[in-house]
Amino acid sequence: MKLVVLFLAAVCCCCCSLGSAGEKEDQKYKLQEVRSQLGQVKKLEQVKKMMQNETMLNSPPHDVEDCCYLSALQCFHDNLEVHFNGTRGIQRKPLRSLRRSLKNPLTKKAVEHCPPEKKTTTTCHECNSQPKVNVTVFLDRLESLIQQALTRLESK
Image (tube, rainbow, N blue to C red):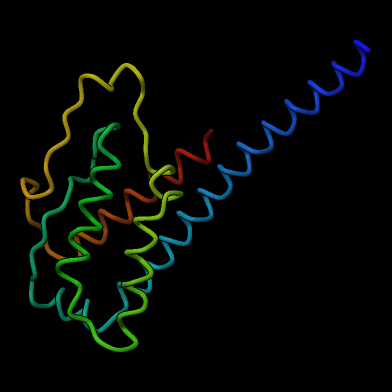
């Protein structure tokens, strides 16, 4: 009887550890997908025109504080929603996909990072109070945020 209980406990432990490993892999895959979608968005004519016109957007800094990754992601999403909404036709699909991916729970969970000791001491800035940067810098910072989250996931 004791042997059966120990066997079942071992099976449960294995299943739990596989579940969390699977979730981590799903998060990595989602971040890689976001990075790919971002690459597609950078190639769009509408985005290239915005780059040439020196359109300015609020952007979190390159070195976002640990507990502010999620609010930074939300800021990037909101700016994409407002400033990149004028695209038409086939160009709309990569932007729509990127915006959806940024709102996806897997993306949010993958980006979220807040060590327990910093939870009470960190104050994140509002998106509107972030400095304005050109579209190229904005997209590069978004890519950097995604890459940092990917690197953190891969090192765990």
